[in-house]
Image (cartoon, rainbow, N blue to C red; front, side):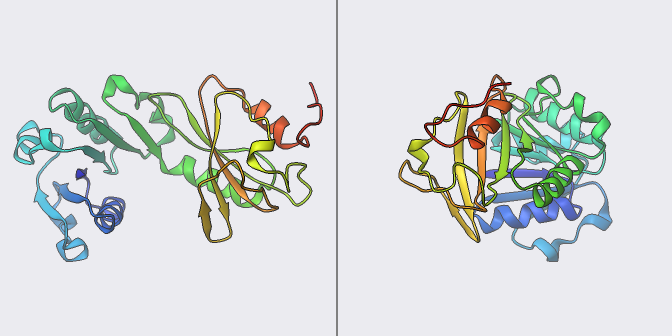
Length: 228
């Protein structure tokens, strides 16, 4: 992919390095000369310019980008970059950093944002995930679709431990997408058996009821599920 990252601070540079490691083309743009730490991400292209200005986005050939990442420390700038990228240059995918959670409500399709990433919320989710075994933790929400990524770590006494994926009657609108076991990531197949301390990652639609997933995980396969 071709990716434009607006904001060459520590967040932007970190994203750039990861994308480059995966073989993507990256252009880092920042209006602050002190942010031009080219040697730290030498494989990327660099541009000293204000991504909120149409002229800068034209010079960057934004219309040819597959993704624009608005990663500055200014929420207003991130919204403007997303809006211009989507409406003026037709970029297929925009990802915007949310610095202040109180501004998160503005990061929607009207501002051209496909995916909003709130660092404080992600950190909160990671803290909860680290200490809450057996509880559902919402890790991420896709703003365009309303779907969520939900994580749960199976305790040793979870009724579903020892069951195969096919034996469990998963709720509708809920997909088990990944099993994290130690340092391994497993794409689940129907024959895979769930083990204690497995981290399960689910994609759950906006219409799904997370409580139904919680009930399934707390009930042995084939048993009658408890009702409220």
